[in-house]
Image 1 (tube, helix red, strand yellow):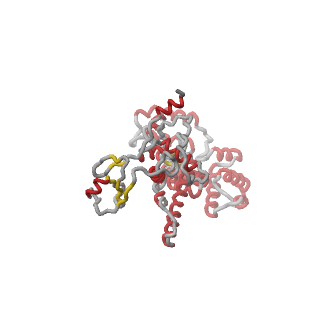
Image 2 (tube, one colour; image 1 turned 135 degrees about the vertical axis):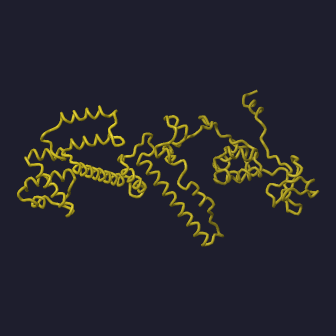
Image 3 (cartoon, helix red, strand yellow; image 1 turned 180 degrees about the vertical axis):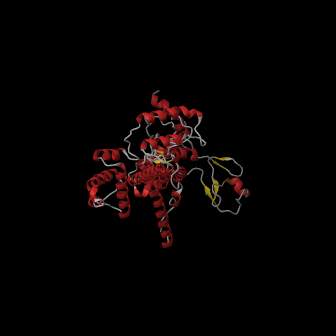
Length: 419
């Protein structure tokens, strides 16, 4: 006996639809039965029907139809008309391609048989998606795939506990992990307004649709379209800012003011763009640094600090002091800092001047008090006018116009003033 004949002998018999009487629970084989029109799926054998047996919401006065034991085939010899109708209904309920769900729902054929039937009867028909108008032989089985079809657990979201465990984290800490962003699928585990598709899932236009109904459908489509646009913006932000990176670090300053400014500006990113947000954050951070520097210098002047070295020494002392006194554990460190300060002290140290300012004073041999007076004059004039040209700056003190010109160039480079 050939191998093909052996396979034919051991092939399991095809599954058929088995009907059961709803009242006496007897299997109905090769006999007519009654199907209630009002009670969905309510089947009775003819003896129960003749006795008028009622059950649940079904009463004997309900209309019914008599169904023959086996409906004839429509498109394939091994598929009855009833099986075809149930199969098409399962496609609508489970979705095209979900053949395993159809097998679990219908139970009279396997998932591969449903797949083969759809492909050979509907998809490959010359009149697709309509089948040929003649009864054909059994479906050709689809070839076995050349890859493993066993289900594989998928944990695409960065905040899944398995993914966090692989990188040694107990809980999500980057924005991408917290938001459930899935970089490999470029979407979120839970989308913005995750159930928005319910707005449009049942929209149908037919000859009974009124202008009011049509306008309501349009409103739902517009509402869903706005949700999709917002989802795309949020995905773009995640990619632009690298929120999905494992080692994400926001490019913002460390101070509380920087963090507060970032918290207010980042929500604007979808509307003004990443570059504008970063530029604004940098400008705000620079402003915070300059304000802090000005306040520190004013504080040092009020406390009698005469140089940057003394100011830095005071800053270190304030860091060491706890509860209004210097702890014993920090005394040795403080004494070492004092000795270092004494060794590095410069008799010609310029009071509260940056290095570039001190170098300019030494180069032009300008006394520090005169420089500070001219600096105060230039800064004040710029603050009052809002801008200051080089000629205007030199005219502030004609006797020192050359030096004022050099101060002007320095302040322009540093960014303290602008034209």
